[in-house]
Structure formats: structure tokens, C-alpha cells
Length: 102
Image (cartoon, rainbow, N blue to C red; front, side, top):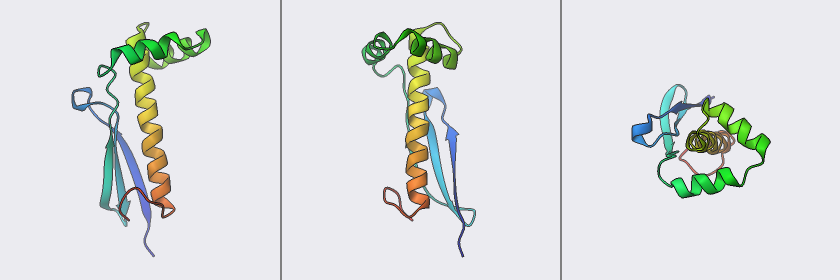
């Protein structure tokens, strides 16, 4: 019986950030996908997002970013969003769902 697993590795910022999902069957890579998270791609969206947050949510994302800059909080949010999307995709693949080859 085959065993399935996945990894999500961070990508360098200069390549678009986010993560790279790798899917494995019996320890052989059989697929994957990139989930970019480029905080510099749309700074206006980042400011709108930050301005729409409550004070506690702002504090949370600034702490996640280890920074006092809203642009860094936006980038941290995008990285988390990319990770969660990659994880959801991988979990769906593990149960035989669609989205990536199996």
C-alpha cells in the first residue's frame, strides 16, 4: 500500500515568497505547486488591508512580522495565507481530492 505525504517549504522573497508544496508517494516526489506571497506586488492592497484591521489584529500581524511597519505585517499575512492555501491543497490531495495529480 502506498504512503502519501507532503512538505511545504518557504520560498525566497526574490522568487516571490510564499511556499512550495511538494507531494510524495512512497518518498518519491509526484507533484507540487508554488504558492507565492509577494508583499511588494500590491502595496495599496496592503495598506487597505492594514487600515481595515482592528487594533488587536494590527498588533498580532506586526508581532508576526517582528516589525513595526505595516508593509511587513502585510507580507506576514500573505505568507500565512499562502501556507494555509498550500496546506488545504495538500490535505485535499491526501484524501484523493482534485487540484493536483495523484
